[in-house]
Length: 123
Image (cartoon, rainbow, N blue to C red; front, side, top):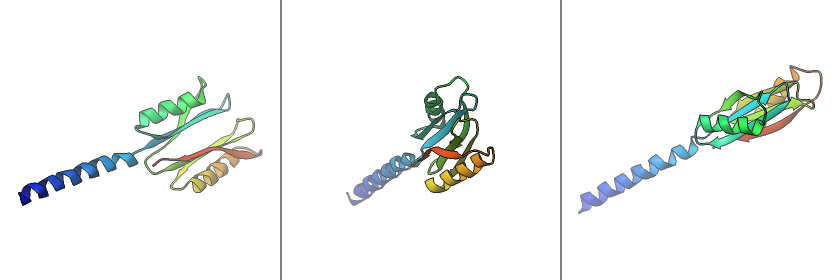
């Protein structure tokens, strides 16, 4: 009887471990259409293909393309100029670091002022 309880406990522990892991496997994507100056993004999606589709849908322009992706436990940010003609993006382990890097990347492409438009983190 004691062995069967131990076996049941072990199996239950394995089940909890197996279900806890995928909760952290979340994905994101950032899409951009430079001609239209539109962007879209996603985060905490269950697969990379779902993240890509959500970002493209959010961008809502035929010219949108995925410009970068974020994996599990990564943060991403996108910054653009007011007219959307220049942009920068970055992924980092922390939201503030991603936002700063996106701003710096955007500023490399313009003499104008860039502003962070979106920053999100995956679980």
